[in-house]
Image 1 (cartoon, rainbow, N blue to C red):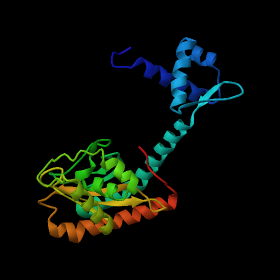
Image 2 (image 1 turned 45 degrees about the vertical axis):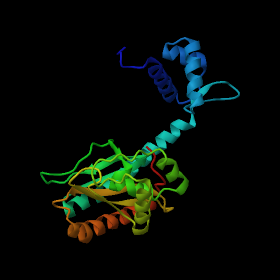
Image 3 (image 1 turned 30 degrees about the vertical axis):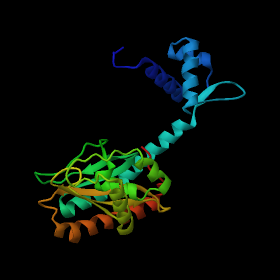
Image 4 (image 1 turned 60 degrees about the vertical axis):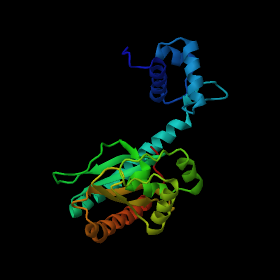
Length: 261
């Protein structure tokens, strides 16, 4: 076994794979035999998996089965795939119209996670690796996602956020950040004026589900040499907010409730 592999995690995942393959409740001894592990080890691992909701146990037979947490994760994955399938054509349309990079993002605590992207064809362009994260307080998409959180959830995240200053334009005061979030809430979109990276501007707008809850955001980013004030206000903001509204209607029509990573 590779030195980088954690044995207990590897064994726990093997147990989950056995429960998936069996597709029905099975006994401790059966799991032990199939996993080629002694019963005491399997029992200990099952106890931990049950504590976290990944495994359940039938009261009458004592047999083990997949827990609700597995189905929650599967549901979240399905939602993310549905969401990306809905949004990607709109990202392409955005890039076709403005030739700047378009992103689909979600919030993970105080960070933004990029879950899809269509790149500009310009030689100088912005890009982020799918799955990469960035600080929410200084990214357009991050601020728009923070702005539309429920008050208690927002406060919970803000108390743990470190307002690291990346450029001279980064908001590093909590009062200023809260004022900016209030403004974003009123206007319905967010702008990042070189707050994360010098020379880079961004505009972002929220995606809502059928209940009106913000579940993700789309954004467009590019160099300030192309994203001038005139281009930003006359072209990009109407484009991004308009596409976000179209996406929200589409998301609501197919019943995507929420994205959880």
